[in-house]
Length: 164
Image (tube, helix red, strand yellow):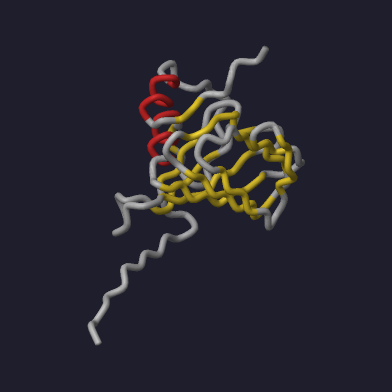
């Protein structure tokens, strides 16, 4: 029988690249696994913390699927104009091209674990975020960068359709 070596990685709770997010998300994202720190190139993963009243704006992905697991807090997710509860234990899969958004409608932080496949969400977060050190207070709200539409196009994110 051939010998196989495992390719395992352990990332601690305070490890990973952590970035403050612009409005309307605020909060932060910590990227845990990417092709840069593990031997696999088919996905990336991390956590996102959305403060009360904050949201991940509506968008879609042309080349990626996105898997979310809600482990704290409460809110809603809207997929192609259908609203669903998002509470601890909820698993959500956003398929390619599905317009989606997440909103924290609760009174405490909403905490999400995400897997993005193929990888690339970490590139988005890096492009729009600001470096975060564990334990530091949340900075004043800041806007998305001026080139956000260029970043969306480069990473094959799809903006929501215009409102009528």
